[in-house]
Length: 366
Image (tube, rainbow, N blue to C red):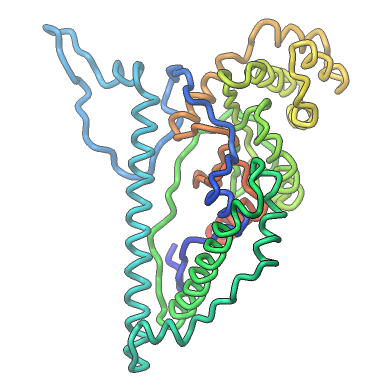
């Protein structure tokens, strides 16, 4: 869809960017994840892929086909393709933004008969960073700073706030000029096509916007994101579908896989979301006996639940979710996608997810 005004990158809230600046982790990440071949490709990237012959090699008349290779390294190929397409899109988008900025500022400076530097000096007044500003950011993030004192991070916070305010002031100017010069931004966002068939979902089946979360019931960052998800559930009821995909990081979370199985056994009895909520509310008790006790408390058919859990009925389903996540480039949890558009940052603040949802709702006209 053509837009009649400039659509730059929506700036993230200061707190989120500060976390990135200080390298504070916001997601559970496993250094290695086991590779499990999927029965079929579960992730596609918009755009044409390079042509590859179906038969890649022959031993006499015995072929080694592309399907044979995909059965062996399909997930890695998908992840590489996603990474390439995402980096390509970022390069294109950044170049477009830089050219827009350069040409808009040059056009406005020429119209006013001044240099670009003089235009920026005249238009951009950046508010001074005060000690109160620095202390407010520090207090808001103190629990995540792993023992660093205000003295340790004061100058980082000061430099960041000064830089971010200037960037925001320049963006405000650029947005105004984009309106005045009728800029149309035609580059669509980077988007994956993720097959969510059969996954637990909440909200209208035909919703125009879908939020997909790849998550791990034992991940503390997923637990931290849980209240945000509940707020999204309330605030976007009737407009957004929420889909839960299993991504247990078993190397660091030994109870996560069985908890994922248990959630799907609960889903079998129509109680996935109640069980999902209970797992995150009681994340410290995820042993098999705990999983069964929770099912009893929710009033599930205990015998049916226990039989489902004990027989590993949903092991393959979870393995397929893991394969889909790895193909989509997921390396840690929680991993979020809004209509296939990645929302970077792991357990991001509500404002970040809400901004992504609002932007997509506006884009699809819903």
